[in-house]
Length: 253
Ligand SMILES: *Cc1c(COP(=O)(O)O)cnc(C)c1O
Image (cartoon, rainbow, N blue to C red; front, side):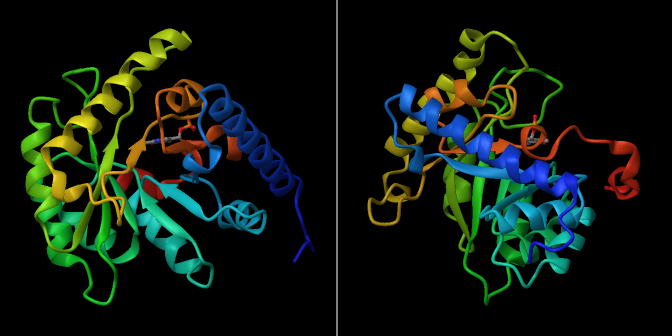
């Protein structure tokens, strides 16, 4: 298993341990249990070899952004016990692939896409876990449902049969200031709390639905954890900087 370990794969394993330590430290600082902060390793543009290295080091959740690239990886790694998360923009003509190959989709901001995923989810698979993406900074150019439209969308998605509404996701404006970073994360946490009150049947204690705050990336993970993130999405700090020029499938997605 450890034959032919490349320096790049070794580096991923080392980075992964470092990120786990950072999660533990941030959780402790926030008075939280680090077991309540799941690590999603974002492997977009990265080769199978590095995903496998992280897997062998114990990582089980992986996130991908580009559907064709992602499906190729899911199929190639079918023999591994990986939980796959789709975290990229999803066009309505690509939903079938997402419904068939993923365990989670984090980027739902339109009912049309959610309906298609529910219709296309294969009957033999468990319901697809869904996070609604919120445009938390209210920037016109960004994807995500507005905070005003969120309750209506959540109610509609919650009613779809083959989906499980798990929570909210956001990608706030980048900032280097930890205090500024916390604001949108706190706002997202407050929105999830509102939804729990609005959709009590989706907040069953026994199943822990509406339990997910997907927030925090390499640059703002600590701030997200301090505001209640239950899943951080980390790419660069595990796999290194991305080189988009290597990936020809990205542009066609
Ligand atoms: C790429 C990406 C990440 C990971 O970002 P890093 O800064 O590399 O950690 C997280 N979430 C989403 C939605 C992404 O597209």
